[in-house]
Amino acid sequence: MKNALLFSLVFASFLGAAASVPLQNRSLDQLAEEYVKLALEVGAYAPGYIDAYYGPESWVVKHDDRTLRRGFPAAEFRKKAAGILKGLDVAAQNKLSPLEQLRIEFLRKQMVALNAEIDVLAGKKFAFDKESSLFYDAVAPAHAREEFAKTIAALEAALPGAGSLQERLKAFKKEFVIPADKLPVVFAAAIAECRRRTLAHIVLPAHESFKAEYVQGKPWGAYNWYKGNAFSVIEVNTDLPINIDAPLRLAAHEGYPGHHVYNALLEQKLAKGKGWVEFTVYPLFSPQSLIAEGTANNGMNLLFPGNERLDFETKVLYPLAGLDPQHAGKFAKVQTLLAGLRYAENEAARGYLDGKITREQALRWMTRYALESRERAAKSVDFWDTYRSYVINYNLGEDIVRAYIEKTAGPGAPLDRKWQVFYEILTTPRTPSKLSGSGGQQ
Image 1 (cartoon, rainbow, N blue to C red):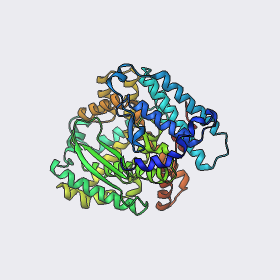
Image 2: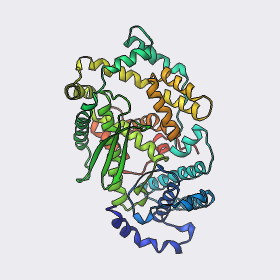
Image 3: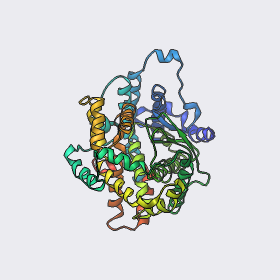
Image 4: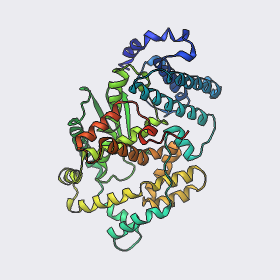
């Protein structure tokens, strides 16, 4: 990578000295380096675990077939993890600045998650809530099916007619599907507007950029692959029809001010600005993901307050998609109501992954209480099979970040102040339990 030489020079000053320093007296920089190298070692046995890495190329671990056949060295990795965690406990006893305190807490929580990933790769299975606690420093609240009844009743009233509510909803949404040949131009307009509005509040690296690609056969709807040097590849999955509400949501979530902005700022402000090497690696199953997904989902609220989203979609995106904006207001209302069912997925995922319900029962739950089509419900279950309890990062992460912004900004705070708090989350080490005030549940 282009920045490999830069990081090699930055950290060369302590590479040689690390071996002679007593284990209990390692600096935070040394502990951070050990964390990155261990994450890369573990990631070499688990494709997809390392979501992004842009540190020294010499640290990248690649295993040949013979090494892989020897098996996963769980005991060796657990020993390394225990040493890093002990070093962090010792370092925490030193006099630290507020920012250093955030840094050490971030590293500790990331290490707890890394240790849990070692256990998972060694064959251990955690219950859904225990796994989310270890990986994401948070546990999603339980919701009984009766809690979704009020939202479902409101949707029944909003979409009267013959047939089941699921059938009526599917027919209604069909009117708002973007033709496949129109999707690139609609998504480009959405990205451009989200970027324009983000730049009004956040200064990004001058060279930041992204590339959009359209893919199929994935368990997710869209994905941001951060490559380093403020560059991302944003993939949009076109397996299923894409409605007119999706382009702005995906543009904000994957791009501006979502994942692309978050990663670019961490790289600029912490990895390069402070030489904090831990921010050159992003293990997917870690508390960093809840912060990433939670901030990405909150971007839309900051970008388009009030009716501004509907106004932009009606005036710009509907015409680009060749859709009639006559019922745009009703579609937006239905989408708002559907948001009241977003925790229904957590309940299905929890029951399915804990072995309490079958795949078929999970599909029926998703069609009944999340009002997903069977095709989309199947995609959801495929996602759980791959990413397990990761699903909590979207809904719970959004709620944790939103509550923190509202509390920190203060009642009735102007939009600029909320953007300021949002920016602080993006550019400083954060953990879910600290944002929520829960203290964590390991």
